[in-house]
Image 1: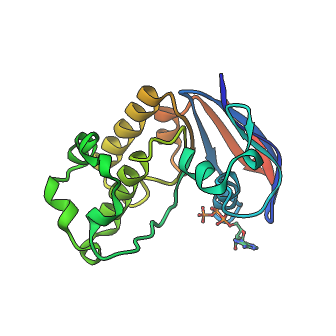
Image 2: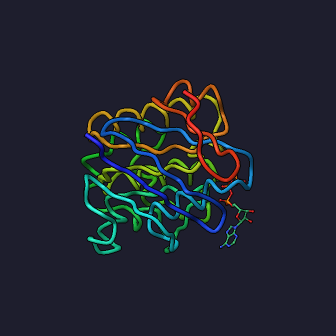
Image 3: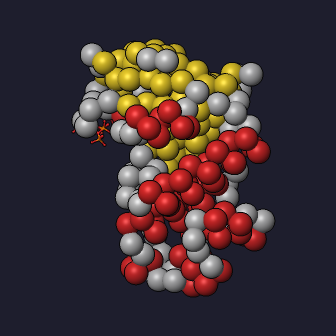
Length: 201
Ligand SMILES: Nc1ncnc2c1ncn2[C@@H]1O[C@H](COP(=O)(O)OP(=O)(O)OP(=O)(O)O)[C@@H](O)[C@H]1O
């Protein structure tokens, strides 16, 4: 089943971008710095205006409210935003159901009481991932989700995303600069070339 598809999408930086991701599959996107990867993810998440169409399970983005689209099409930015002082304030009430993800990523329950100011870049990155998964999105748009992490944490994050993908049958679009990571995680690899996307495998 095609879970997520874009057709002739154009951002300020390029296009047309046409690709689809089946339920439970992962498409990796790569390309040089500044080629427009983040802008494409933001357009897919309906955060920036863009020409063209994007559909989730056959339903066009314009047929849903923006909050509903963004809940189901979850965007993990390269740099996460935190809007209150305490970590736990950012987590939805179902955090207990998914506490094992926090544990898997090296945290104890106490992390919910931590002040956001003390978080390292890598801690923010891992916590922002769990925060996103708590919304149970059908699509994950991941912008370099392991960029700030050591090897051991890279593998843990890959495992959590892989487990979520399988369990939720989620479609994943994963921006990565690492060919090894793309080999480990993706079913298909698309590269930015001349302002658009070319499939490499
Ligand atoms: N709102 C905007 N209007 C016009 N140009 C923009 C806008 N936002 C970003 N850009 C430019 O578009 C280009 C692509 O930016 P983008 O953040 O998508 O790159 P990227 O491929 O994600 O890069 P990196 O790998 O460094 O994160 C950059 O040159 C950037 O300066």
